[in-house]
Image 1 (cartoon, rainbow, N blue to C red):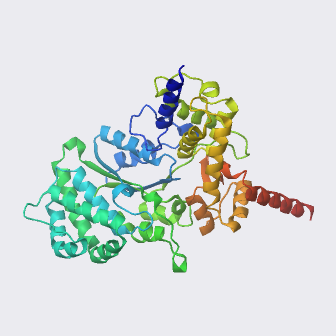
Image 2: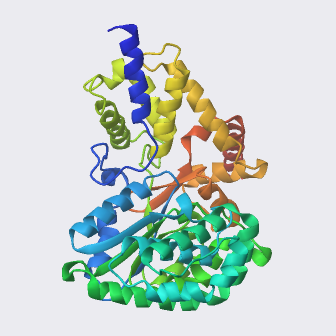
Image 3: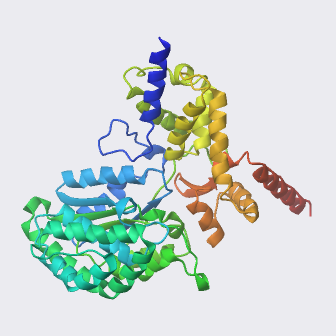
Length: 450
């Protein structure tokens, strides 16, 4: 194999490990259900939509980068094949700023994407709502809104301006919310007129309308005075508005909210259990390697390597990586988190001494050190003892400290018959974790001796 050809293969493999969500039907998709406690979005969310007579409102969560968007895109395709009209969007892409989100931002995003995704319906109710606020909006957006030719295209364009300003312009964001917050109920009413018209005009076999609002699980956690959080304000305090659309809706939500002491509130309010996508189980509750989980991660790597014609069929253990031990360590250090797995491969390739295969253990070690530093920097000094306690018990407490560690993925949820939790394996080798774990062992021995 010529040197230039080897470098080209490595470059192609590097680009095959793109962390973006996989489109439905992708040849790169690997079914991880067996090592995710049987989690299946087509069953857990899809059947409720297909079976229920009335519109549903469901919540879906999981660790960021764990594969939720890929699963929701599968659900979109499955529901469409079964006769639903599905409007999917990722709110973080163009509509909301995950560091500063309010309910109004989400409703405006839903409006824009409904107009864009259901063009058969009459947009007049929504355009009338917009026109009533046009003058005030023009003063905030510093741009004209021309209603000489009202159309769905006008609605899409103008709502896109609003959501883009909310996402990128802090000053305009505050002004737009102040202007629009009092009129969210009338916007929901206008949208429901639009949705009712859509159900009449869509083909009979496609009249079940579903909105999937992805990306909301990334909303940063802000704890406010009195212990209330912005997550609670959006998904609990404004639940009636979130449930107000007269169609099926799925919202992704932060995992730290679903795995908190508000979980029973969410179930009662939304009349369903919030569905969680667990991480691939790479180790057991006894801290032993889980062979099934490791093999699943190897299958993910295999599918991406085989997508390169020149690399298809190469041995992962000896030709893509320099040894079986390097490949297994890669899988273990990812913690079963798919985006971490993909990132580690890409970063190890960057550090590889030779610009050709195999990927060396030393290059992976550099990538692991970088990933460890990223997670290490999110842990406060007083949280190392919390991490070791979870590592020991495999359970979490319902408090802000543990919710914060879940949100940053320092703690991961796994599932067998029941859910359990552990520290991201990349932190197991952090000096502070080792010291805290040793202190915990000494404390337990001391208690036993008493």
